[in-house]
Length: 204
Image 1 (cartoon, rainbow, N blue to C red):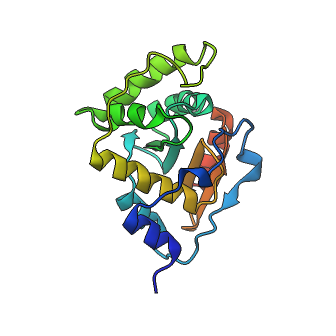
Image 2 (cartoon, rainbow, N blue to C red; image 1 turned 45 degrees about the vertical axis):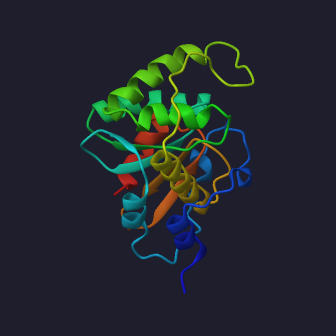
Image 3 (cartoon, rainbow, N blue to C red; image 1 turned 90 degrees about the vertical axis):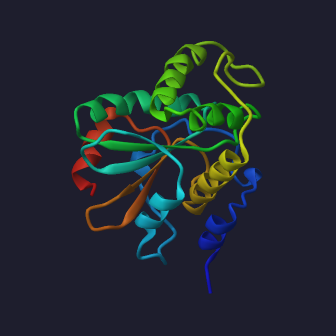
């Protein structure tokens, strides 16, 4: 009998209201949590196949960074990770989800449906840095690229959301990682460069 996590991944069925529509504002480093899904011996391999992401970096341990395009803390997390990626110490797989605002899905689609996703993500984050410096309106930051999500993109975002829900995270950013002993873990909320560097030796 399959558990709820596997059913969610197969169906891609997600109720956006399950997650609170706000981003974490404090650091999650001090509150490192083990994942509550422990029944899958191949959990890490399974999510790697199910998630749709944009990878940056080629050396170091792999982490999955769940972000919503309308989350300013997710943008701050992106900036904190960049120097570590460029130093060859970390591989980050950026996993878009869309639930904070109506514009989240079209903005995520602009990245995922680009023929060059990595470049699209970098352009998006560069624009986001300027947009988040201004007061946010009811539709989120203005001027960010957006397009209508395709059926494939909608399904991919739903599956990404199902995986995020399976961790029992209550918002974004959320970092999914694997310890050297193989156990997956979760960092909810903002993580600084210094906290990342402290965590790195323990990652697989």
